[in-house]
Image 1 (cartoon, helix red, strand yellow):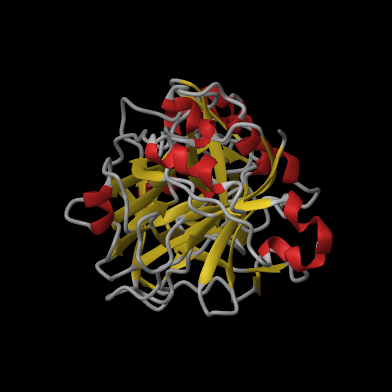
Image 2: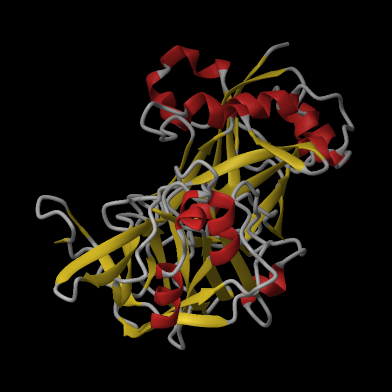
Length: 447
């Protein structure tokens, strides 16, 4: 170790990077290395600069009807401010046949299935679920690509549930006694139902005519509660998500006619009001003590590793980015669990990002990131931490020419599947005196 100290001392004096290295007695299971221990070095003081930034807009349209659910709800988070998630959806008739004018209209009901995952917030707080119709002059385009920042004017209310207390774990049957799931139902406006019933066969059989007339629906929630709730709604399940129009034939025979969301375009719109929130005050600023991340196109963290290209002539054996959760803040709400999965991306161009190689290489058949990490784990000291394997990508950064542009030495920490989660995390920053964010680096000298 004494032989290495002059090298690092020179680097420190030159202020090229703010880290020191030494051989520890037991780094990364080094007690098992015996006489090979001298072949490895270890540091956990590589400089990091973290900045909280807004997440970029996301494509949320569902042209192939494969989305497992859409987020819908309203939250007022003590640290992140207000968030709303709205759904815009088209629907189509199940059978392209006109309903005879001699039939008598009865009622129209919407059924919406809860997803089994994706719920975030407090289900014991009442919500108001609202259904609005997209205004005349606007419409959802059947083949349109929509982003999370887009919305459409929808001012005509055609349905609502007041004081909704969702029960997403209560599984009931609906149209089939053998199939059970969690869902809700709400009565829609009769004028809307009568309009649908009056459409002729040409309108029902030609998609463009039908979509032009209905224009689309907006599904949203409002709440005065804190923290509120974001619900996951699966519109693509034909067994539990549909609109059913009830009518009477020959004055006595009760019948129904169904419309389905599956097969039609849908998209999510997210809005965030960070005014006066702790997270909002940190946006665009270097985050030394606390860093904030949020789903639903919320916040991500830019992490710069400014001196990584000064680590010359080393082979990275393991690089572990470690971030600890701060769940001891005043007014923190227990039901707001930290995000279940982080990923790390890099800049490809000015407007394009891509996952780093360590994330891609870790994806398994079940869609997890076992070899990468990025999930919260409560460790033996009682602290919840995220570990992220950066070994391959950090080697790429080490191999950059000295003095490379800082953009090439920057990564982004994102919440995974941004359009499908409202989860958030508050983590300790790199200069925290408690559990600072750091990279634990195990390496071998190559010269």
